[in-house]
Length: 227
Image (tube, rainbow, N blue to C red; front, side, top):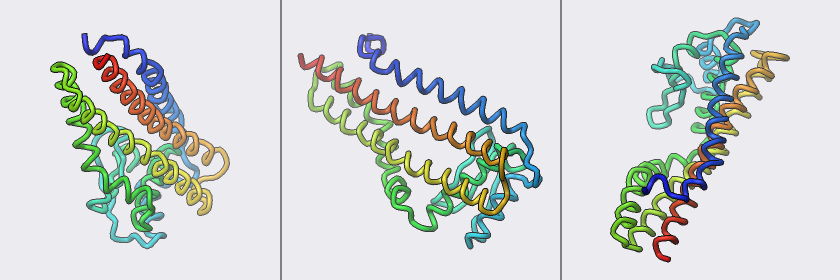
């Protein structure tokens, strides 16, 4: 069976890392969502204060459904925070809100890795949807050219995941610098926010490792079919 062949072992370490990363962010977020900040600011208030302090008065903050669905949309120049973060006064909520403002700062300053990532989003989306389909057709019908096309398309996914890493780490570093620099968080609170952001960053590392492992598996399948 295609999905249960020996090459699946290539994915095992990545799957274990991904599972650990998901458990880590969930447990860390839950822990520090119970630690309230002494200043009593909500995530939305912190985000607004940081955005305004950076001259981004025209960037609105909206509520989005779900948990840990917070993001900055560079196309619409809108920050969207989950209800728990938007209304929350916890260290975790403030850390996440500040992280998203970090993305807004990157966008305003045209931070190079973010510009590159945004420019290849359409390619990455197409590659993600078509790579496996084309590769599978090439595998079933023994068409080497389609196998190569599938591999090259999936390489676009890997590149996107790798470029995402400096974008996310930089946003977290910006968040912590501004939170501590403005006195919004300090001491144990700042340490808690930093741990939340580090745990969140590990999910992106896990995604990159998984993408690389998938690419290696495609190459292994292609080589085995040729042999």
